[in-house]
Length: 394
Ligand code: PLP
Image 1 (cartoon, protein in one colour):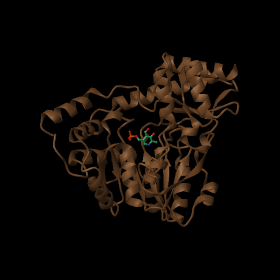
Image 2: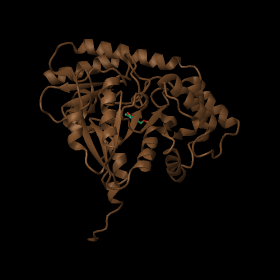
Image 3: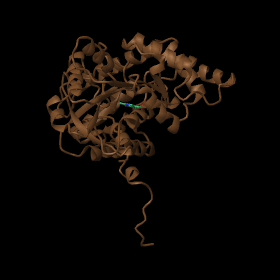
Image 4: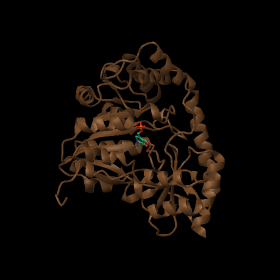
């Protein structure tokens, strides 16, 4: 007693707890709460994917595999990025990871030293910052332009870059805003990164979740810039099977690296992961290489819910769309009044039995906003939005 002893590292102590989890925990304890806070597909995992996992385990695929991933999955991933993203990547430059979060962590560890700075979107998925903190690196939030043409604010970026900046992270379509960057926006931001000698890490978690016209991914835009003789940065693309294939619990993704970085990422993976669960990888090969109907079914459901919710919000003033949601499965809503979003989200659960993610959980620029997940059933969404608007206008 009385000693200055503290448990744990300074890096661990610097990790902020998730503000989304706090609302979810409260919602789970409050009966009758409509849950609109979850960033998880409501669709079931496709049966052929589940069967591939079971079959692999029965066939004895229950041992360590190669650190970069089983060849069947790396080949299926290379074929998928060619088919869907228009990228030509060798399976030799695909590394399997345990979900996007682990892939992003491995990429950060491959690129960042303690004290290096990473430019991350604000608002943005919180782990893009906290993953840097656990490396001893420093996340620096950059603003996103809202409205009809979402994208990074280049003028603001210019003021944030320092000699210690190493990486710019882009996430499009975005969690939490649902905004997608078009090709011209990406050209500008990638050109800017190249002129500053930055690596670009593209978080492609929602790469197939475009609700309107799909836009090219960052790596493809960089390829086109290079082909036309313009400055282009090196891009690492981190893909996930979680949302596209309703496989959040499988923990599976893949990293596409420029060849020079591939052995570095794999060295990190060897020491921190050994390999991803082998039966899970066989399920992933089935998801990427098999029928894709479920992907369009999910997109169609999110598109219909987005349109219905937008119509329901109508032109009342209390809760309005801050960004045009062209991808992912979220609505980013600005609310009237100056109540802090974490207080409001808590009050909405306790007094009105509806749970939304507080905007502040996604960074300081998220204040004044709430995030609704479109991965909730139609009637739950309609009643949930009704409750929020009623609470705000009461
Ligand atoms: N990136 C973004 C923007 C996300 O929203 C998420 C999950 O919510 C992830 C990455 C990571 O997902 P997973 O680790 O399940 O692949």
